Length: 107
Image (cartoon, rainbow, N blue to C red; front, side, top):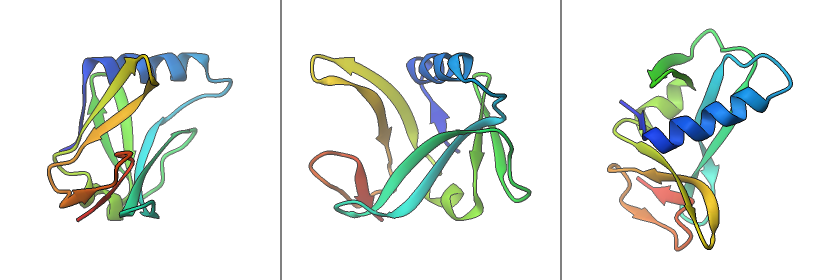
């Protein structure tokens, strides 16, 4: 199952709190693209889809579509802040390779 670190939960909570509309959860999705073949996308959603898996991660509801759920199994999402910037970092034990920037992967 996918998990969020404490810092990731805090960051998502901040985004949800500052949203101008009701939020059903955070959609994390895997799409074709990026340097290595697949890339992660994230967005706040007002509604879940009928076939979504709903995952509670420390009070944050994740919305996972069927195709992405299997590719996200075992993934840990962290939020990092450093001198180079801030953002979400994905640790995917299923990835057989990643690109130099770490935003895309192969399975």
